[in-house]
Length: 382
Ligand SMILES: *Cc1c(COP(=O)(O)O)cnc(C)c1O
Image 1: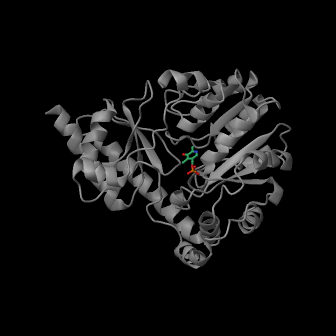
Image 2: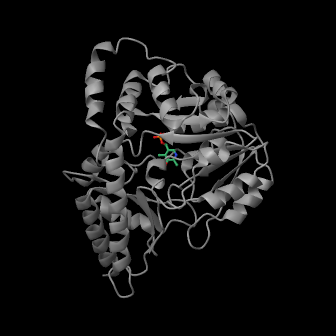
Image 3: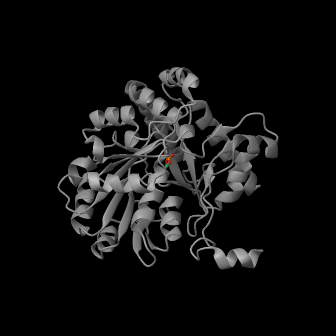
């Protein structure tokens, strides 16, 4: 049976890793016997979506027998108006991860080169490899930021596609407007530039974060900016991502390859309701940024020489998470946190196995995380 499958399967598929989607609440409760979990592993928004989302979903219940609008007309109109982008240059995905996959399916062939960065957002590597492309992973600087000269050099070599996450997930560092200008100048027009702005709503509050649509406006080559309703808009469970494309032609290519109803009715209605209550989202984003800075400060204090978390290093972040270099293997620490129901993401990539990513939760959750982290460090020393 195995050899039968081996003879049939595309050679790119068998070696692919399965995306590390983390443990579900139910799995953590069952495995560790905890009554409650604290979810700090998936960069979700703990403040939840606008209450209008629940109203929209309730109203939709009577119509779930109808197929969705394959064109997402109302949501498209609202986003076009809000972003200033022509309707025909918008694309939608079952999460922005689907758009990442579609771009790979449309553009990549065996041997093509894709540039991105490590530590990597898994799907920026898995989907190109699925198509047989070769992924070049650029390293961070010693200060855990983007290596802009390395990016410029890699882009100058003319890869088929580049996934530039801004800010980076898992690190949280960003490319500022000046650095972005250098990257854009380095990229030849034959390179498809994909700027993944999954944390745009948080990052835009940071000094120097680029208005990348303005910067891309004069670019001759193709590009797409990806955004999502999963993070700041708190709709991760419904799967709505969107892309702003350099041209209607590029958007039309997506339409050829996607499944016609990739955005289900609940997703469309919920996203529209959330979008129409932007102040709700903005309040939670401001709160989250304050909580992020407070958590970073607290950890910094505890990381001083002789303090309980000595050896810990915190990467500067403009997103809704922090990337921590623990100075010791992260997996056992994450395990100790799980035993208390606290879910974080220990990094598994070579060179980063001492790091973990913690999402910003509500104040009490962040405090529980710090408490458990101090305890876990102490237990290891004992
Ligand atoms: C979360 C995330 C996404 C995917 O979000 P969807 O839920 O699929 O919309 C894409 N890119 C990055 C960098 C992310 O962190």
